[in-house]
Amino acid sequence: MWTEIAQQIRQVTGQDFEVVDRTSIGGGCINQAYRISNGHGQSYFVKVNSAGAEAMFAAEALGLKQMAAAQAIRVPRPICHGSTSSNSFIVMEDLDLSGRSGSESWAEMGRQLARLHRLAISDQGFGWDRNNTIGDTPQINGWTQSWAEFWTEHRIGYQLKLAARRGGRFEKGDRLLDQILMLLDGHEPEPSLVHGDLWSGNAAVTADGEPVIFDPAAYYGDREVDLAMTELFGAFPSAFYQAYEETWPLAPGYKQRKTLYNLYHILNHFNLFGGGYASQANQMINQLLQ
Image 1 (cartoon, rainbow, N blue to C red):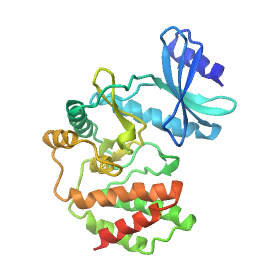
Image 2 (cartoon, rainbow, N blue to C red; image 1 turned 45 degrees about the vertical axis):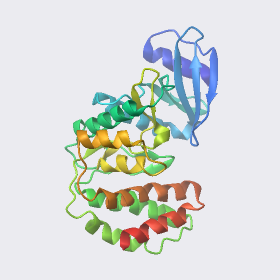
Image 3 (cartoon, rainbow, N blue to C red; image 1 turned 90 degrees about the vertical axis):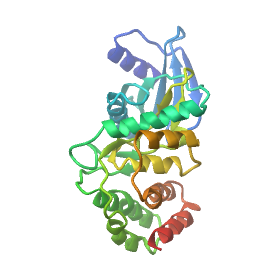
């Protein structure tokens, strides 16, 4: 496998490269991650999965390229992606993410994320050029002119269908789907390019103090979905939110919408991992229907 990956790196970069050193990197639950090096200072970050995951990595590479094109916030540069005889993979630049994330770094991340959201706007509506994944769950991105309809059909509705197949009991799920149009009534966001899976595990700071976001599940949607998820599994430092608000203030009603947006991720976690996420999702549904 590593010989084939090195060959593709050489084809793309036009530079000689052989895998001399390989280090397994923990932290992911979907893919295996490695740092590979030629032993002479050239290294890359590689994610590996089964042979059937090639489309997932192609979508990740496209998301990273589109985010980088906005020139608003640093993301790892994708080098190549593809498959070997037994695996699929994506190769990216190897960033040193050992920087200390102090208040100024978090503030800069907030400013830069707001700039990404403001600069990368779609004129096709809400969605993306292809479906991708959230974790390893399919994420449906069919273009839709109405944000409320997009969120109803392609986000909450789709996750509830998957949950039903897993035996999940969300008795008020259909009622919520009927209410989403009302819950989002009057809210008309710009279709911003969003990271789509922005929690603390997908954000860091380089050794030079530069903010970086990675592992996207990109699409064009309400920018608030990114802000909401940063609060789901332990909020980012307050400097991040203050700087974002100063750069591009959020619309009134975000607090209620935040629960609706984060319900998508909790339902997805139920579909991926089961367990107590069903109870959390039902609590959020009840909250939204009050």
